[in-house]
Length: 62
Image (cartoon, rainbow, N blue to C red):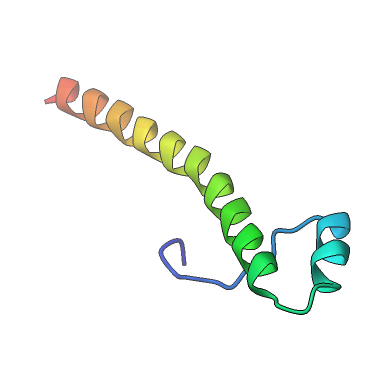
């Protein structure tokens, strides 16, 4: 489930209202992709740090 790809909509209500009034939806899609990208980075950093801590404590027990 964590590795699956889901289509998400990450725009706030005001951004969505402004961008939906535009003819071409390319700007709205670009902004949505940027928001999702910025949202994913902290989760990846926390997961990486958690893995390193787990690995360090696991090797100390051996």
